[in-house]
Image (cartoon, rainbow, N blue to C red; front, side):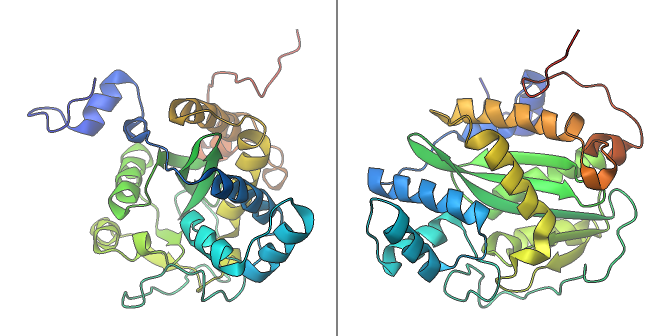
Length: 284
């Protein structure tokens, strides 16, 4: 359906004409043993509830409250595979490139007063019945709107850059872009993309998930309100579920911190027409 390397139409243009997101091209769920997949589901649920659990605490939790027995070596490997970093210093689970330059954290005590002032992004593990994928999302910190997202079976820098570039085309560029210190966000391709658009680069302190708290809160929301309630059999089903939740989150789900208004309303400065999703029941 999509012809890569087309002489006249880029992959992005072909997907736009077909009405599909480019992440649908990468539906190849990553596989692990059945035991590791079950342990990853346990870890993901518990870590979402207690993001301060490092490897030792997670080992204790699994050994105490599940039917499985694990050692720290296995859990540490799964943490790295899932790209999990506990709040607080966590040198053993950080995936930062030691040789890459780390940009300073620019958001401390910064008043955020308008849309497109600060965007933040992160990657999270999404489990399925038969494998897992990674979800990359970009959030506008003033409005809490998800300005773009994508699914993939890898956490490559080029994938993140494509999603960011698409967000720039859809919504313009922010003044500041904040991420953690992961290898995707210290890669040359990522740094050059933001510098080329004159976007200031901000990075969390090492192991400091609290610095990127808004995207962390979003991960908790989408997992508890969508992923855990509707476990997917495969990539296409997962994409459809997340796409519907994103519409609900941006256009229907009011936020207490926004005076019960929706992220899209705050971001655009007005109410935006939308299609009702299964999360909203209209009473006639």
